[in-house]
Length: 84
Image (cartoon, rainbow, N blue to C red; front, top):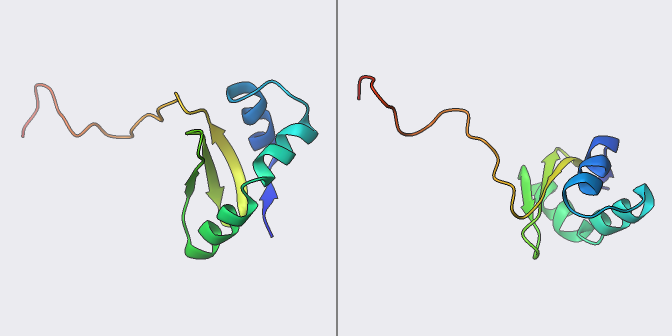
């Protein structure tokens, strides 16, 4: 069973579509089959057909990124002015 955090619902409203919490939950749950398979496999991200990314921790959706949002990398593969 997939759970959705309140934070994920708020990020959906903020980043994907302005709507009610119930509408955000329903929109995320339209991907429940993919989310359940991904959680069983141990995946951390599910990319939707529209390009949105649903972020998983176990079987809980904890955040949502819009299609145009690019998460920051922790470390850049390119270093400027340092040892190579």
